[in-house]
Length: 360
Image (cartoon, rainbow, N blue to C red; front, top):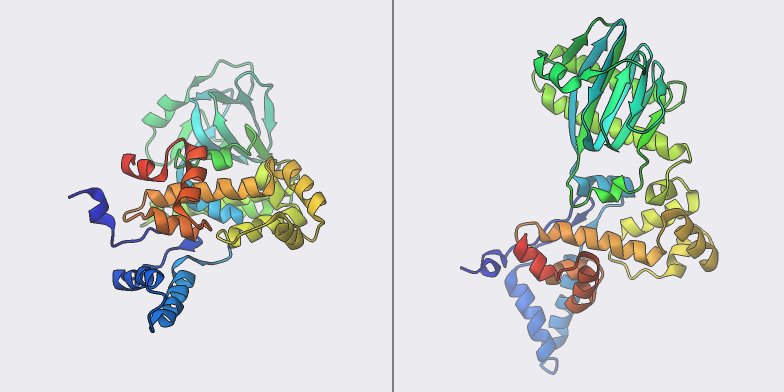
């Protein structure tokens, strides 16, 4: 049986804040019929039903912030590894890691050395994220020759790795994403994000880190679930702290701007709306020209280009779901025709939605 026939009765689900509503095939057939029988006595009733179905089927959206929406597409998986303890003179090299690694100095100070970068002193209470990092070293002295960290972790039992003592304690782990959407976040992050222990945001991070460390050491029932959820919380808190610092670029940095952030939240809150630049400027409380200029400066794209990009990422995710319907996805993302949607999709991903759907 052709794949299209197997899937035609289901509708896809977009992540997080966007949900498709399945409509019985008989009602859809009635709507189609009303277009070709407008002169019949019951045509008005059919058209009324059709309008109601169109308004209902498109999408139901709960207003959420863009970071939550992006996380839903990333399908974040938190892989908390262990607490690393070291004493005396020591240096350990860790392999390159795609996406994000985190480290937090629970006790003691040490040096963090990224390849081809100057050593950075990590103080007690500091938390840091390494994005798409190369091989790196942590050490009591950057001049020391490092040992292989992978071998240390492989030989360890449980969630604690000890190397010579416990003067220094580091909680570490990693986050991996759906590679197809990873660029949404990775493209707006620097190689290293450091939240100092004396930063006000660190007070919240310390609570999460303590809960995470306690859970790792106790090994109670459901530890894997709890540590994964706490890892998600830790990543969001670290990104919040980074955004509040004024350092980030792209959409993440723009979220911290009261006016541009309001426009971004409006777009994400009603992705199917026929947005115009003046509508978004009004949501931001700015003139059209000032808004367009500021948005591009902050986000790196003009407002409507950003909206199209976000719609296409939602569409690509939806096309991977069981029962994906190109027509319903197009309508639910604000496109009046499949062809307009298909052209936008192909410009971004190099394939038509139907070919993408078949190949996936």
